Image (cartoon, rainbow, N blue to C red; front, side, top):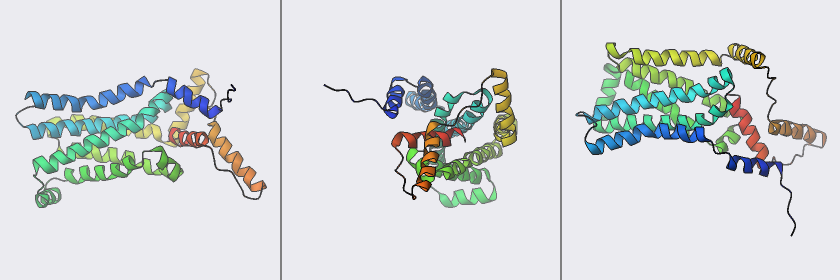
Length: 266
């Protein structure tokens, strides 16, 4: 009986199966907990007298917290080199979209009983926070749809450009919260606004470069090499030019490395 030699791609896949990402599981459990708690309290009759308002507040607050947490993953990697938190960005963003969708359904279905003419009248005349909230959700929809690895490969670098709109969604979410909050409660959306501003500041290219260089100087680590897959693709492109333009299709593990390259550079 002969054993086939393992390829580098199969070894990487085996290591991924063996290494359970406990941080990912904990983050997803924490994101699901507000929904589980809300359902439990509803069944127990302890959700409150005004159930519509309670669901509205909980889903909206959870959505903006998870959205800001998703946007914080890359800055945390920039500041501290925690590459593991990058694995949470997609999940936290999808959870944020899910809670935002529940927030909208509660608002339209239970609060306004699908009276769209009344919603439109209030949005235009007296409640501009409705427009900001709807705009935020409309931005999140294409981001949620294109969050898969297949869409990353199809869009290439355009995927990175598209998903930068997540910060626009964050700004709209903060405005939505700020405009509908009472004067005594505006400290909370202002806190989110400050946090979002700091995250945007860290993402400025010059600031990002200075932080990374300072961190590497302090820790004594050199620059992280570019993923091997990206190098292989470029090498294949150069070889194709010298060989008459024909190039073999990249292997799945190489494509996966390119996807990782796109994600970590965001």
